[in-house]
Amino acid sequence: MILNNTYYHSLWEKFQNVQTLSTEQFDNSVSLSVKIILEHYSKKIPLHINFQNSKESILQIARQLFVELANDIYLNHYDLPNSFCVGDKLKKVKDNQYYEVIRKEKDDYTIKQVLRKRKADISPAIIQGLTYDKLTKGYLKVDLGISEKTIKNYFNFFQELNNERSEFPKTNFEMKSVFISKRLLWNNLNQKGKIPSIYLPNPREESNLSEDKSIPALSDCMIYFTPKYEVCYQKLLLKNEKIKTIVVFDTEVNAIPQMLQDRHRFGFNIIILSNSYSPIKNNTIPCWNWFKEEINIINSL
Image (cartoon, rainbow, N blue to C red; front, top):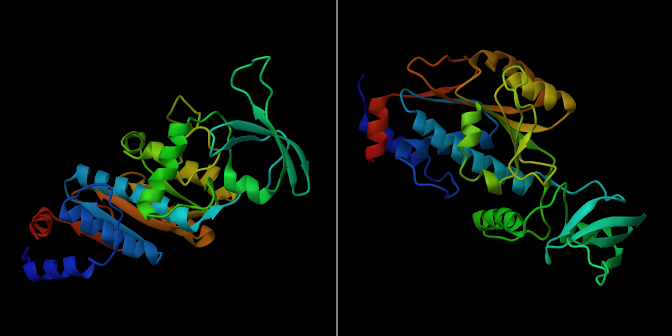
């Protein structure tokens, strides 16, 4: 193999203008790979990135993509609740208090405070005359209790990433992305507690079949994780969940042809990350196969 240092320097310069979110410090090879992926992601072009011998590198790339793809969903694919119904549990963002919708007539809602401690001398507050607009801007619809710290961590995380404050709490999303990966990746996500995401177990291999939510109180999410494409197909695609991108993380190689067929039907993009001396390639997906010698050159730039 004859390596041209000038080529790799030009390659490095070519992708320098691709913006990434600052979450971790990476080697140049990881940073460049993320930039190449995001360039393809923005154009909805499939891509396969392979490292010859570096599980840590593709793990770092996956963690960064988790944040990048989630932030794209947060900014560009958020949705508002379809409606609020009598019985819905709400949390007021400003005062950390819980409420329940007790009356609804067209765009006129009445909510009642849910007291955390039952005391005879305390009467729950009742707020009348709330519109749908006021509810979406000032309240969260929640399934369970959620701590003030958890919700602040979530909002602050995305505010700091984007250096801007949203005018209403974004907790519903019309589109998601999916990581097809073993549970190991889910367990090694540094920012999981700040990004609404759901792990869907594989019923054929896992004994615990309950969904695992990173923020249990929120009913919706930005990113799904599951170890099998079949689970993604059955539980998400066939149920009309809109999927923007599927990231295949060092697994399910044999499912790639089926994903490519389904891509035309459902419209998602495919990003593949692998760690193999002889990666299995598909003719319709460009493969960026990093050799050790190339990585050394890039990392020295």
